[in-house]
Length: 229
Image (cartoon, rainbow, N blue to C red; front, side, top):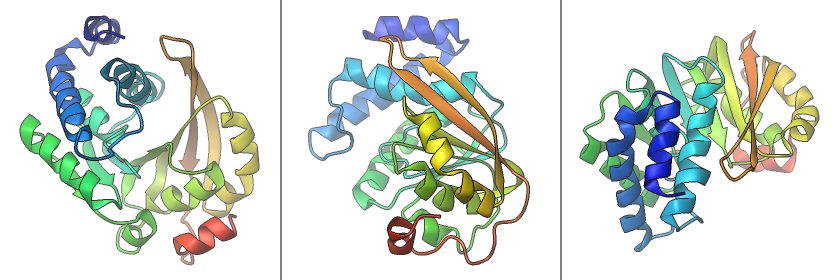
Protein backbone atom coordinates (compact mmCIF):
# COMPACT_ATOMS: atom_id res chain seq x y z
CA UNK A 1 0.00 0.00 0.00
CA UNK A 2 1.42 3.36 -1.07
CA UNK A 3 1.15 6.25 1.36
CA UNK A 4 -1.23 8.01 -1.04
CA UNK A 5 -3.57 5.00 -0.87
CA UNK A 6 -3.29 5.06 2.93
CA UNK A 7 -4.26 8.74 2.89
CA UNK A 8 -7.32 7.87 0.81
CA UNK A 9 -8.26 5.19 3.34
CA UNK A 10 -7.87 7.72 6.17
CA UNK A 11 -10.03 10.18 4.23
CA UNK A 12 -12.77 7.57 3.86
CA UNK A 13 -12.72 7.17 7.66
CA UNK A 14 -12.63 10.92 8.40
CA UNK A 15 -9.06 10.77 9.69
CA UNK A 16 -7.04 12.38 6.89
CA UNK A 17 -6.04 15.30 9.14
CA UNK A 18 -3.75 12.89 11.00
CA UNK A 19 -1.85 11.71 7.90
CA UNK A 20 1.21 13.91 8.48
CA UNK A 21 1.66 12.70 12.06
CA UNK A 22 1.31 9.09 10.95
CA UNK A 23 3.88 9.70 8.20
CA UNK A 24 6.35 11.00 10.81
CA UNK A 25 5.67 7.96 12.97
CA UNK A 26 6.28 5.66 9.99
CA UNK A 27 9.56 7.42 9.15
CA UNK A 28 10.81 7.12 12.73
CA UNK A 29 9.81 3.46 12.85
CA UNK A 30 11.73 2.69 9.65
CA UNK A 31 14.75 4.68 10.84
CA UNK A 32 14.91 2.96 14.24
CA UNK A 33 14.23 -0.46 12.72
CA UNK A 34 17.60 -0.23 10.95
CA UNK A 35 19.27 -0.27 14.38
CA UNK A 36 17.00 -2.55 16.42
CA UNK A 37 14.23 -5.10 16.04
CA UNK A 38 11.05 -3.11 16.65
CA UNK A 39 8.70 -5.06 14.39
CA UNK A 40 8.92 -8.17 12.24
CA UNK A 41 7.49 -6.23 9.29
CA UNK A 42 10.12 -3.93 7.73
CA UNK A 43 8.52 -2.87 4.43
CA UNK A 44 6.85 0.57 4.85
CA UNK A 45 4.01 -0.36 2.52
CA UNK A 46 3.25 -3.47 4.58
CA UNK A 47 3.52 -1.50 7.83
CA UNK A 48 0.80 0.88 6.63
CA UNK A 49 -1.66 -1.95 6.12
CA UNK A 50 -0.68 -4.57 8.69
CA UNK A 51 0.16 -2.22 11.56
CA UNK A 52 -1.44 1.18 10.96
CA UNK A 53 -4.78 0.22 9.37
CA UNK A 54 -4.99 -2.87 11.56
CA UNK A 55 -4.60 -0.64 14.63
CA UNK A 56 -7.25 1.83 13.47
CA UNK A 57 -9.95 -0.74 12.62
CA UNK A 58 -11.32 -1.09 16.21
CA UNK A 59 -11.88 2.67 16.32
CA UNK A 60 -14.31 2.25 13.42
CA UNK A 61 -16.12 -0.66 15.13
CA UNK A 62 -16.87 0.35 18.73
CA UNK A 63 -16.95 3.44 20.95
CA UNK A 64 -13.52 4.10 22.43
CA UNK A 65 -13.14 7.06 24.78
CA UNK A 66 -11.68 8.14 28.12
CA UNK A 67 -8.56 6.31 29.29
CA UNK A 68 -7.02 3.43 27.37
CA UNK A 69 -4.15 1.05 28.14
CA UNK A 70 -2.35 -0.99 25.49
CA UNK A 71 -0.78 -4.14 26.95
CA UNK A 72 2.41 -5.27 25.20
CA UNK A 73 2.29 -2.34 22.81
CA UNK A 74 5.62 -3.17 21.14
CA UNK A 75 6.36 -0.37 18.67
CA UNK A 76 3.05 1.33 19.55
CA UNK A 77 0.36 -0.79 17.93
CA UNK A 78 -2.45 -0.07 18.48
CA UNK A 79 -2.10 2.39 21.38
CA UNK A 80 0.16 5.02 19.84
CA UNK A 81 -1.83 4.99 16.60
CA UNK A 82 -5.02 5.41 18.64
CA UNK A 83 -3.55 8.45 20.37
CA UNK A 84 -2.58 10.06 17.06
CA UNK A 85 -5.97 9.61 15.41
CA UNK A 86 -8.02 10.21 18.61
CA UNK A 87 -6.01 12.92 20.40
CA UNK A 88 -8.60 13.24 23.17
CA UNK A 89 -7.83 9.73 24.46
CA UNK A 90 -5.66 9.37 27.55
CA UNK A 91 -3.31 6.52 26.64
CA UNK A 92 -0.92 4.34 28.63
CA UNK A 93 1.48 2.15 26.64
CA UNK A 94 2.65 -0.87 28.65
CA UNK A 95 5.78 -2.51 27.26
CA UNK A 96 8.35 -4.68 29.10
CA UNK A 97 11.19 -4.19 26.57
CA UNK A 98 13.20 -1.07 27.38
CA UNK A 99 14.50 -0.41 23.85
CA UNK A 100 10.94 -0.28 22.52
CA UNK A 101 10.02 2.14 25.30
CA UNK A 102 12.88 4.41 24.20
CA UNK A 103 11.46 4.39 20.68
CA UNK A 104 7.92 5.13 21.89
CA UNK A 105 9.17 8.11 23.91
CA UNK A 106 11.03 9.41 20.86
CA UNK A 107 7.86 9.33 18.74
CA UNK A 108 5.83 11.00 21.49
CA UNK A 109 8.43 13.75 21.85
CA UNK A 110 8.71 14.30 18.09
CA UNK A 111 4.94 14.50 17.64
CA UNK A 112 4.50 16.59 20.82
CA UNK A 113 1.76 14.27 22.08
CA UNK A 114 0.15 14.98 25.46
CA UNK A 115 -1.69 12.73 27.93
CA UNK A 116 0.22 9.61 26.91
CA UNK A 117 2.49 7.57 29.19
CA UNK A 118 5.02 4.85 28.47
CA UNK A 119 5.34 2.22 31.21
CA UNK A 120 8.38 -0.06 31.04
CA UNK A 121 6.85 -2.95 33.00
CA UNK A 122 5.10 -6.26 32.59
CA UNK A 123 1.32 -5.83 32.69
CA UNK A 124 0.86 -8.20 35.64
CA UNK A 125 3.33 -6.15 37.70
CA UNK A 126 1.78 -2.83 36.67
CA UNK A 127 -1.63 -4.15 37.73
CA UNK A 128 -0.49 -4.42 41.37
CA UNK A 129 -0.84 -0.64 41.80
CA UNK A 130 -3.24 0.17 38.95
CA UNK A 131 -6.13 -2.27 39.29
CA UNK A 132 -9.42 -1.31 37.70
CA UNK A 133 -8.12 2.03 36.45
CA UNK A 134 -8.89 2.17 32.72
CA UNK A 135 -12.02 2.63 30.61
CA UNK A 136 -10.52 0.55 27.78
CA UNK A 137 -7.75 -2.04 27.74
CA UNK A 138 -6.54 -3.58 24.51
CA UNK A 139 -3.83 -5.90 23.25
CA UNK A 140 -2.74 -7.02 19.81
CA UNK A 141 -0.52 -9.96 18.83
CA UNK A 142 0.62 -10.56 22.43
CA UNK A 143 -0.65 -13.99 23.54
CA UNK A 144 -3.52 -16.45 23.31
CA UNK A 145 -6.76 -14.99 24.60
CA UNK A 146 -6.95 -17.09 27.79
CA UNK A 147 -3.55 -15.66 28.79
CA UNK A 148 -4.42 -12.19 27.54
CA UNK A 149 -7.56 -12.03 29.68
CA UNK A 150 -5.54 -12.34 32.88
CA UNK A 151 -3.07 -9.67 31.77
CA UNK A 152 -5.75 -7.17 30.69
CA UNK A 153 -9.02 -7.57 32.58
CA UNK A 154 -7.62 -6.74 36.06
CA UNK A 155 -6.69 -3.27 34.72
CA UNK A 156 -10.23 -2.41 33.56
CA UNK A 157 -12.68 -0.48 35.71
CA UNK A 158 -16.11 -2.01 36.27
CA UNK A 159 -18.20 -1.02 33.26
CA UNK A 160 -15.14 -0.69 31.05
CA UNK A 161 -14.20 -2.64 27.91
CA UNK A 162 -11.56 -5.18 26.99
CA UNK A 163 -10.86 -5.21 23.25
CA UNK A 164 -8.79 -8.18 22.11
CA UNK A 165 -7.50 -7.68 18.57
CA UNK A 166 -7.33 -11.02 16.79
CA UNK A 167 -7.11 -12.59 13.35
CA UNK A 168 -8.95 -15.39 11.60
CA UNK A 169 -8.96 -17.71 14.66
CA UNK A 170 -10.64 -15.16 16.91
CA UNK A 171 -13.86 -17.07 17.61
CA UNK A 172 -11.99 -20.29 18.43
CA UNK A 173 -9.88 -18.36 20.93
CA UNK A 174 -13.02 -16.75 22.35
CA UNK A 175 -14.57 -20.15 23.07
CA UNK A 176 -11.38 -21.42 24.73
CA UNK A 177 -11.14 -18.29 26.91
CA UNK A 178 -14.75 -18.14 28.13
CA UNK A 179 -13.92 -19.47 31.60
CA UNK A 180 -10.97 -17.08 31.95
CA UNK A 181 -13.03 -14.00 31.09
CA UNK A 182 -15.86 -14.96 33.44
CA UNK A 183 -13.48 -15.79 36.30
CA UNK A 184 -11.88 -12.35 35.94
CA UNK A 185 -15.20 -10.49 35.96
CA UNK A 186 -15.89 -9.87 32.26
CA UNK A 187 -18.54 -11.06 29.81
CA UNK A 188 -18.29 -11.36 26.05
CA UNK A 189 -20.34 -8.63 24.33
CA UNK A 190 -19.66 -8.89 20.59
CA UNK A 191 -17.21 -9.71 17.81
CA UNK A 192 -16.65 -7.13 15.08
CA UNK A 193 -14.80 -8.29 11.97
CA UNK A 194 -13.36 -6.34 9.06
CA UNK A 195 -10.91 -6.93 6.25
CA UNK A 196 -7.62 -5.25 5.58
CA UNK A 197 -7.29 -3.83 2.05
CA UNK A 198 -5.59 -7.01 0.78
CA UNK A 199 -8.25 -9.22 2.33
CA UNK A 200 -6.89 -10.51 5.65
CA UNK A 201 -9.59 -10.74 8.31
CA UNK A 202 -9.23 -8.92 11.61
CA UNK A 203 -11.67 -9.37 14.49
CA UNK A 204 -12.14 -7.29 17.61
CA UNK A 205 -13.47 -9.39 20.50
CA UNK A 206 -15.21 -6.97 22.85
CA UNK A 207 -15.84 -7.74 26.52
CA UNK A 208 -17.59 -5.70 29.22
CA UNK A 209 -16.33 -5.88 32.80
CA UNK A 210 -19.31 -6.39 35.14
CA UNK A 211 -17.63 -7.12 38.45
CA UNK A 212 -14.33 -6.72 40.25
CA UNK A 213 -11.51 -9.11 39.42
CA UNK A 214 -10.67 -11.38 42.39
CA UNK A 215 -7.63 -10.06 44.27
CA UNK A 216 -5.46 -13.11 43.51
CA UNK A 217 -5.35 -12.18 39.81
CA UNK A 218 -3.22 -11.51 37.88
CA UNK A 219 -0.73 -14.15 38.93
CA UNK A 220 2.90 -13.93 37.86
CA UNK A 221 3.48 -14.55 34.17
CA UNK A 222 5.08 -17.96 34.67
CA UNK A 223 1.92 -19.20 36.39
CA UNK A 224 -0.39 -17.58 33.84
CA UNK A 225 1.49 -19.19 30.95
CA UNK A 226 1.91 -22.58 32.60
CA UNK A 227 -1.66 -22.89 33.86
CA UNK A 228 -4.04 -20.55 31.98
CA UNK A 229 -7.51 -20.08 33.45
